[in-house]
Amino acid sequence: MTDLELSEPLEGLEAKAQAFLFDCDGTLVDTMGAHYESWMAVLNSVDASTDLPFDRFCSWGGMVGDLVAEEICTELGLTQDPGDLARRKRAHFMDKEHSHPVIVPVADFARKVSETHPVAVVSGGNRPTVDQTLRDAELDEIFSVVVTPEDVAHGKPAPDMFILAAEKLGVDPGGCWVLEDGLPGVAGARAAGMNVVAIGAAAIQQLKRELYA
Image (cartoon, rainbow, N blue to C red; front, side):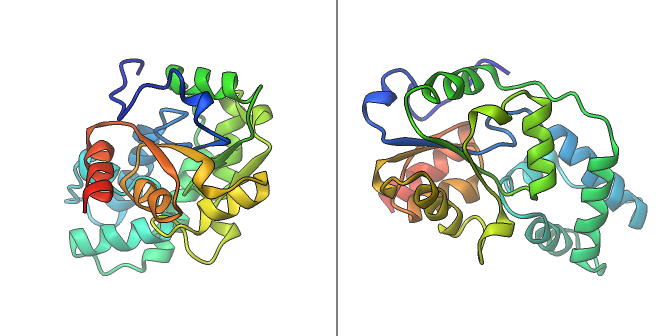
Protein backbone atom coordinates (compact mmCIF):
# COMPACT_ATOMS: atom_id res chain seq x y z
CA MET A 1 0.00 0.00 0.00
CA THR A 2 2.46 2.60 -1.18
CA ASP A 3 0.46 4.58 -3.74
CA LEU A 4 -1.45 6.76 -1.30
CA GLU A 5 -3.96 9.43 -2.16
CA LEU A 6 -3.14 12.38 0.12
CA SER A 7 -4.86 15.71 0.59
CA GLU A 8 -1.42 17.31 0.31
CA PRO A 9 2.18 16.11 -0.07
CA LEU A 10 4.19 15.13 3.00
CA GLU A 11 7.32 16.78 1.67
CA GLY A 12 7.90 20.12 3.34
CA LEU A 13 5.42 19.67 6.19
CA GLU A 14 8.19 19.70 8.78
CA ALA A 15 8.63 23.43 8.28
CA LYS A 16 4.95 24.06 9.00
CA ALA A 17 4.45 21.90 12.08
CA GLN A 18 5.27 21.97 15.75
CA ALA A 19 4.23 18.33 16.16
CA PHE A 20 2.74 15.42 14.25
CA LEU A 21 -0.10 13.15 15.35
CA PHE A 22 -0.69 9.85 13.57
CA ASP A 23 -3.69 7.58 13.48
CA CYS A 24 -2.66 3.93 13.71
CA ASP A 25 -4.98 1.55 11.84
CA GLY A 26 -5.13 2.36 8.15
CA THR A 27 -2.63 5.21 8.49
CA LEU A 28 0.59 3.82 9.93
CA VAL A 29 -0.24 0.13 9.61
CA ASP A 30 -2.48 -1.70 7.14
CA THR A 31 -4.74 -3.41 9.68
CA MET A 32 -8.24 -2.61 8.45
CA GLY A 33 -8.62 -5.93 6.66
CA ALA A 34 -7.70 -7.87 9.78
CA HIS A 35 -10.11 -5.85 11.93
CA TYR A 36 -12.85 -6.44 9.35
CA GLU A 37 -12.19 -10.18 9.39
CA SER A 38 -12.57 -10.25 13.19
CA TRP A 39 -15.79 -8.26 13.06
CA MET A 40 -17.21 -10.55 10.37
CA ALA A 41 -16.27 -13.68 12.33
CA VAL A 42 -18.18 -12.40 15.36
CA LEU A 43 -21.13 -11.09 13.35
CA ASN A 44 -21.46 -14.33 11.38
CA SER A 45 -21.53 -16.24 14.66
CA VAL A 46 -24.76 -14.43 15.61
CA ASP A 47 -26.28 -14.07 12.13
CA ALA A 48 -24.96 -16.14 9.23
CA SER A 49 -26.67 -13.83 6.73
CA THR A 50 -24.65 -10.78 7.83
CA ASP A 51 -23.56 -8.61 4.92
CA LEU A 52 -21.38 -5.67 5.91
CA PRO A 53 -19.46 -4.18 2.96
CA PHE A 54 -15.81 -3.50 3.65
CA ASP A 55 -16.03 0.11 2.46
CA ARG A 56 -18.91 0.76 4.84
CA PHE A 57 -16.90 -0.71 7.70
CA CYS A 58 -13.93 1.49 6.82
CA SER A 59 -16.10 4.60 7.09
CA TRP A 60 -16.14 4.04 10.86
CA GLY A 61 -12.34 3.75 11.04
CA GLY A 62 -10.97 5.53 14.08
CA MET A 63 -14.07 5.16 16.22
CA VAL A 64 -13.86 3.26 19.50
CA GLY A 65 -15.01 -0.34 19.17
CA ASP A 66 -18.17 0.05 21.25
CA LEU A 67 -19.36 2.86 18.98
CA VAL A 68 -18.50 0.82 15.88
CA ALA A 69 -20.58 -2.02 17.33
CA GLU A 70 -23.51 0.35 17.85
CA GLU A 71 -23.22 1.54 14.25
CA ILE A 72 -23.08 -2.05 13.00
CA CYS A 73 -26.12 -3.12 15.02
CA THR A 74 -28.10 -0.15 13.71
CA GLU A 75 -26.93 -0.72 10.14
CA LEU A 76 -27.75 -4.44 10.14
CA GLY A 77 -30.77 -4.35 12.44
CA LEU A 78 -29.14 -6.64 15.00
CA THR A 79 -30.58 -6.97 18.50
CA GLN A 80 -27.39 -8.17 20.19
CA ASP A 81 -25.74 -6.09 22.90
CA PRO A 82 -23.17 -3.87 21.12
CA GLY A 83 -20.82 -3.92 24.10
CA ASP A 84 -20.75 -7.72 24.08
CA LEU A 85 -20.07 -7.80 20.34
CA ALA A 86 -17.22 -5.31 20.76
CA ARG A 87 -15.64 -7.39 23.54
CA ARG A 88 -15.89 -10.55 21.46
CA LYS A 89 -14.36 -8.81 18.47
CA ARG A 90 -11.40 -7.53 20.54
CA ALA A 91 -10.81 -11.04 21.91
CA HIS A 92 -10.93 -12.55 18.41
CA PHE A 93 -8.47 -9.99 17.07
CA MET A 94 -6.04 -10.39 19.98
CA ASP A 95 -6.15 -14.21 19.79
CA LYS A 96 -5.03 -14.26 16.16
CA GLU A 97 -1.47 -13.94 14.96
CA HIS A 98 -1.04 -10.95 12.69
CA SER A 99 1.64 -9.77 10.33
CA HIS A 100 0.46 -6.30 9.42
CA PRO A 101 2.42 -4.46 6.73
CA VAL A 102 3.32 -0.90 7.55
CA ILE A 103 2.03 1.77 5.18
CA VAL A 104 5.50 2.64 3.97
CA PRO A 105 5.24 6.34 3.03
CA VAL A 106 3.54 7.25 6.31
CA ALA A 107 5.69 5.00 8.51
CA ASP A 108 8.87 6.33 6.88
CA PHE A 109 7.62 9.90 7.35
CA ALA A 110 6.87 9.19 11.01
CA ARG A 111 10.38 7.83 11.58
CA LYS A 112 11.88 10.85 9.85
CA VAL A 113 9.94 13.57 11.69
CA SER A 114 10.32 11.83 15.05
CA GLU A 115 13.96 12.88 14.94
CA THR A 116 13.07 16.58 14.81
CA HIS A 117 9.50 16.94 16.13
CA PRO A 118 7.33 15.61 18.95
CA VAL A 119 5.13 12.80 17.61
CA ALA A 120 2.17 10.91 18.99
CA VAL A 121 -0.30 8.21 18.02
CA VAL A 122 -3.98 9.05 18.41
CA SER A 123 -5.97 5.88 17.79
CA GLY A 124 -9.56 4.78 18.26
CA GLY A 125 -8.39 1.25 19.06
CA ASN A 126 -8.18 -0.05 22.62
CA ARG A 127 -4.76 0.34 24.19
CA PRO A 128 -3.63 -3.32 24.26
CA THR A 129 -4.46 -3.69 20.56
CA VAL A 130 -2.74 -0.43 19.59
CA ASP A 131 0.34 -1.24 21.65
CA GLN A 132 0.57 -4.70 20.10
CA THR A 133 0.12 -3.35 16.58
CA LEU A 134 2.86 -0.73 17.06
CA ARG A 135 5.22 -3.35 18.52
CA ASP A 136 4.56 -5.78 15.69
CA ALA A 137 5.23 -3.01 13.17
CA GLU A 138 8.41 -1.96 15.05
CA LEU A 139 7.06 1.57 15.42
CA ASP A 140 6.49 1.66 19.18
CA GLU A 141 9.86 3.15 20.11
CA ILE A 142 9.48 6.31 18.03
CA PHE A 143 6.31 7.55 19.78
CA SER A 144 6.62 9.27 23.14
CA VAL A 145 2.84 9.59 23.48
CA VAL A 146 0.03 7.19 22.58
CA VAL A 147 -3.56 8.30 23.22
CA THR A 148 -6.49 5.86 23.04
CA PRO A 149 -10.16 6.15 24.00
CA GLU A 150 -9.45 4.89 27.52
CA ASP A 151 -7.70 8.23 28.20
CA VAL A 152 -10.66 10.54 27.53
CA ALA A 153 -14.38 10.93 28.07
CA HIS A 154 -15.18 11.01 24.36
CA GLY A 155 -13.32 9.34 21.49
CA LYS A 156 -13.29 10.29 17.83
CA PRO A 157 -15.08 12.20 16.28
CA ALA A 158 -14.87 14.34 19.44
CA PRO A 159 -11.68 16.43 19.69
CA ASP A 160 -10.74 15.16 23.17
CA MET A 161 -8.05 12.68 22.14
CA PHE A 162 -6.28 15.15 19.88
CA ILE A 163 -6.32 17.91 22.50
CA LEU A 164 -4.92 15.53 25.11
CA ALA A 165 -2.13 14.43 22.77
CA ALA A 166 -1.15 18.06 22.17
CA GLU A 167 -1.12 18.69 25.92
CA LYS A 168 1.08 15.64 26.52
CA LEU A 169 3.49 16.80 23.81
CA GLY A 170 3.51 20.35 25.18
CA VAL A 171 2.43 22.00 21.94
CA ASP A 172 -0.45 24.20 20.84
CA PRO A 173 -3.21 22.33 18.95
CA GLY A 174 -2.94 24.82 16.10
CA GLY A 175 0.66 23.78 15.53
CA CYS A 176 -0.20 20.10 15.14
CA TRP A 177 -0.55 18.27 11.86
CA VAL A 178 -2.63 15.09 11.95
CA LEU A 179 -2.26 12.23 9.47
CA GLU A 180 -5.58 10.41 9.37
CA ASP A 181 -7.49 8.03 7.09
CA GLY A 182 -10.73 7.82 9.10
CA LEU A 183 -13.70 10.12 8.71
CA PRO A 184 -14.27 10.40 12.49
CA GLY A 185 -10.59 11.21 12.97
CA VAL A 186 -10.63 13.96 10.36
CA ALA A 187 -13.67 15.51 12.06
CA GLY A 188 -12.09 15.23 15.52
CA ALA A 189 -8.78 16.74 14.46
CA ARG A 190 -10.47 19.67 12.78
CA ALA A 191 -12.68 20.19 15.84
CA ALA A 192 -9.48 20.39 17.90
CA GLY A 193 -8.24 23.20 15.64
CA MET A 194 -5.53 21.09 14.02
CA ASN A 195 -4.29 20.79 10.46
CA VAL A 196 -4.99 17.49 8.69
CA VAL A 197 -3.39 15.44 5.96
CA ALA A 198 -6.26 13.19 4.90
CA ILE A 199 -5.39 9.78 3.48
CA GLY A 200 -7.68 8.16 0.93
CA ALA A 201 -10.58 9.48 -1.10
CA ALA A 202 -13.23 9.23 1.64
CA ALA A 203 -11.08 11.06 4.21
CA ILE A 204 -10.16 13.73 1.66
CA GLN A 205 -13.84 14.35 0.96
CA GLN A 206 -14.51 14.58 4.69
CA LEU A 207 -11.70 17.11 5.07
CA LYS A 208 -13.16 19.21 2.27
CA ARG A 209 -16.52 19.19 4.04
CA GLU A 210 -14.86 20.27 7.28
CA LEU A 211 -12.95 23.06 5.57
CA TYR A 212 -15.73 24.45 3.41
CA ALA A 213 -18.86 23.82 5.46
